[in-house]
Image 1 (cartoon, rainbow, N blue to C red):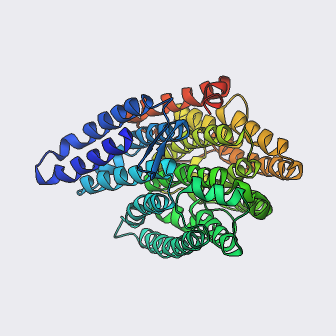
Image 2 (tube, rainbow, N blue to C red; image 1 turned 180 degrees about the vertical axis):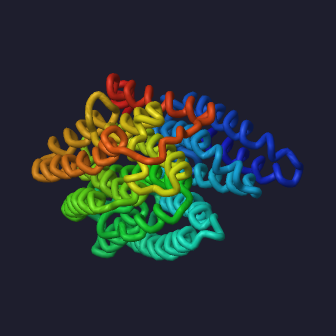
Length: 455
C-alpha cells in the first residue's frame, strides 16, 4: 500500500513540475522516488493486510510490485533520451508513473471493482503514449488501434464482472471463491468467467486476441513498446494469476482446457510468425506474444509452482526485453532502420553493444546460463507436474523455433558485413544500464532459487 501512495504522489509531483518550473529536476526526482518506493515496498514483505476489502497486500503483491518498480527504474534509465527529445516531458513522466500505479493495483486487488480500476488506470495512459508521436502515421495508427481494441476488451471484462456479480452477489474474490467451492455457481457465472477470460487474454496478447499487438508495438515509440512488453504484460499476468488462482480455481475444469488450447496456439503462432519478420521491432512484438504463451503454462498448472514460476519468468523476460529494446533504439537511430540487416557487423564496430544484445537474446531464447533458461525450466516443470505433458512438448518445439529467429540477429552481428562502420556512442547512463542488466541476467541464471523461493 505504501508503494501505491508513493507512486501516486510522485505522479502528482511530475504534473506540478511544469507549473512551478522545476521540470529539469523531474528526472532525478522520479528515479529517487522509484528507488524510495522500492525500499518501502520491501518493508511490506511478510505482511498480509487487506485494505477495506478492496486491496490485499500480501507476499504475492509485494513480490510482483517489486518486479514492476524495479523494471520501471531500468526502463526510465533506458528511456532517458526519449524524454529529453520531448518538450512536454513532464506529461510523459506523469503518464508513465500513473500507469505504474495502476499496475500495482492490478497485482494487489481483492475486489473485482479494483481490478477494473487498475486495468483502466494502467491502460488509459498507454493509449496516449502509444500515439504520442503526433507527426508519425504509424504512431497515430498504434494509438487508435490500441484504444479501440482496448475499449472493446474492457467491455467484455465489465460484462463478465457484472454476470459474476449477478450469480454470486459479490465483487470480493474470496467470497466468490467460496460460492464456487460450495457448488453455488449458476450457468450465468460460467458465462461471466469466459467473458473475463476474453478480456484478460487481450491484455496479455494471447492468441486469438493478439492481433492488435504487432501493429501497436511497431508503431509506438520504441521506449513505449518496451514498457508495454514488460510492465504492462507483467501486471496483466499477475492480475490474471491472482484472479484464476484465488477466485476461479474451484471451477478449473471449465476453463483449463480453453486456456491450454490458447497457450498452445499462442506459442506456435507467436514463434512461427516471428520467423517471417524482417523488422526487429516487429519480430520482438511477435516474440512478446510467444512469451505470453509460456506464461500461460504457469497459469494452467495451478499448483505450487505457478506463482513462483510466473514471477521468475516475468522478471527474466522483462530484463531481457529492456536490454534488447535499448540496444535496438541505438542501432535503429544510428543506421536508419530497425531491420535485422541493421545489426550486420555490429560486433566489429560496437563489440560492447553486440555482447549486451547477445546476452539479452540468449536469455529470451532460454539458453543457459542466462535467467531465461531457468525461467522456462520452472514454467515447464509446473505444467508437466500438472499433467500437461503434451503442452510442454509444444512449448519445447516453440522454443527451438524461437532460438532460430533470435540467432538470426546474433549471426548478423558477428558474421555479416555492414558498409556503415561508424561506431555508436553510448551515454554513461546507458552503459551503466546495460552492465546492470547483463549482470542481472547472468546472476538470475546462476542463482534462480533467490526468486523462486520467494513465493
